[in-house]
Image (cartoon, rainbow, N blue to C red; front, side, top):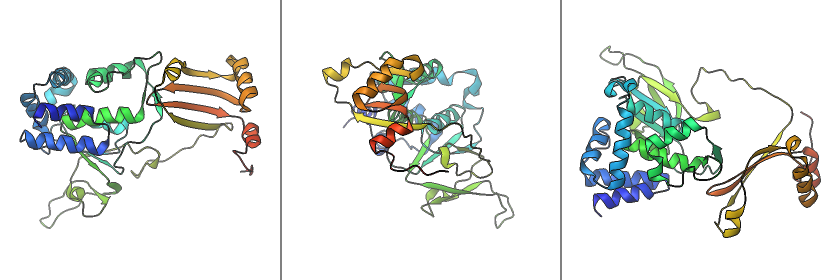
Length: 311
């Protein structure tokens, strides 16, 4: 397989491991060291003349030329560890790469399986377009409501991160920080981390900054947690396979409606299904995605809740 076909396969890939495998193969074919993060993008830009590749290079070059990045000199002497390959972790890694840092990202999973759908703001849409999402996902924001599944967003961002030289390691769990200490020569080494599996190649990685993007797990110590409790709201999320039939295509999305604003709609739903909802959102993406709040009594009557125990 020639380089341009391999790049096309990389663009089309939809699994975390496959994306990494194809990128490694592409670098090997072009004699590019993927660990040479400062030169990965430059070499790819020189070697690949596929029309999609050229369009992507143009977009990324335009982004890199923004004055805030100081020609990739702003963080050129910094090494950064990012924990988590969710949308926030990947986007942070991309930004650090534009700043010129050496970026390593670790993720404990080896697949992207989050089908929940995000309603995205206009400035986020523009940011993703500027990074080239239309090249990888032409259907982005074509519908009546602007949204994207978390999985699809991760698939796109991990490809951009790899192209920009971010080092990505899956199936590795961050446990704790190891504070700087003098080595046998009396020289104080920088920050390191303890990972699982132990003796991983990153065990000796010394970094200057740590970005914790692992969500509610929050494995980075020293950050207090606060919990805000409001009134009881029983949230339900459901994903159903989108078979893309004609009947499914005709179904209208619901950007978000509460009982108080469309009482008849919810009364009709309760009469037809026996389910009493307070609100509902429905997005049509790779899946039919529903998120809603159901009333407790309705769930008790349906047998979803077996018993209520006072807290």
